[in-house]
Every structure is written in structure tokens, then in C-alpha cells.
Image 1 (cartoon, rainbow, N blue to C red):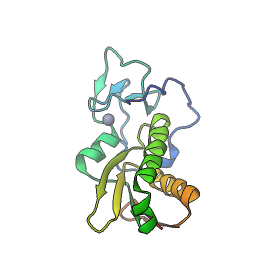
Image 2: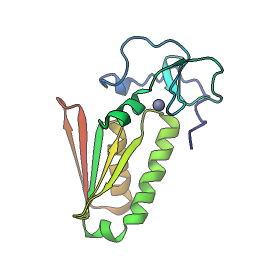
Image 3: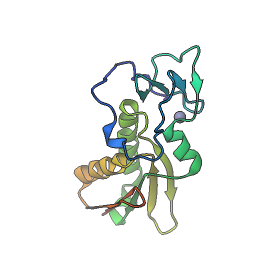
Image 4: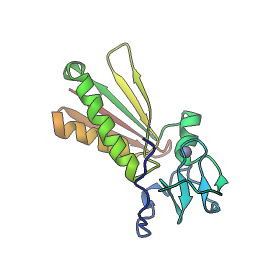
Length: 164
Ligand SMILES: [Zn+2]
């Protein structure tokens, strides 16, 4: 899906949690600006899914697509353990549901890659720091286990580990 839930204006919620994200452009973007990779639109001071694609727009990659292009995640979630191995599909499904719901509301919160490693761990990368925490907490709420969250300020990346 490419998200059509962005039609509502919420000027009071100006993505303040992302003010330290180096991928967010400091200089003011002209409006509307369309991301040619994902069709998200910068309008009203923030990136949002458009109800329809503007006929005329400036063009630049959005921060989420830049991170994906650069393979430079803001958050990394590592899943491991015997319980995980036995409930792999179920847990991945939970993750996808959580991600799609968040992405519909917050276009810059996205999953980038899912890497199934040979040692049984699954490593998932994200374009923002809140999504891996939210996903980790959703898994913990549903399945218990151990959740660890490490934030590295200098690297500006959050590493989340869930094991069961
Ligand atoms: Zn984009």
C-alpha cells in the first residue's frame, strides 16, 4: 500500500520527535514537494501521504527513501531465541501489521530490510528510532520474552533486542 490516510491536517503535531534526525532537511522545502520514489508529499510543513498526487510539485527524495537508498537505518531490531524460531511467521506478521499501521499515520516511519541470518536471528532495520521500540514492545506484550533497548546518542541509532 502506499498510504492514503494522510489527508487530515494536524498542524499541532509537527514531528517534534524527529528534530534530531540528520536526514530531515533543515532548509525549508518548497511546497508541495513530491518524493519520486514513494509519492509522499511535503505539504503544510510536514511529509504526509497525499489524498491525491499533486499535478505540479517540486521533487526530492524524502528522508525515509534517502535512508533506504543509503542503507543507513535509524533503528535496528534483532529477534532471537527458540520461541521465536517456533513462532517466526506469527511474529513477522505482527511486525508487519504494526509497521503498516504506523507508516500510514507517520510516513517517515518505515521498515527498511529484514535479514534472516544463518544463526537463527532475524535483524530488521527501520527509518526511525521509535518504530523498532514500538515493534519490540508489541512483541513483548504479545509473547513476553526479554526486551532490551540501547540508544547510542553519537551514532543516533537505537538498537533493540528481543529474545525468547
Ligand atoms: Zn520517499
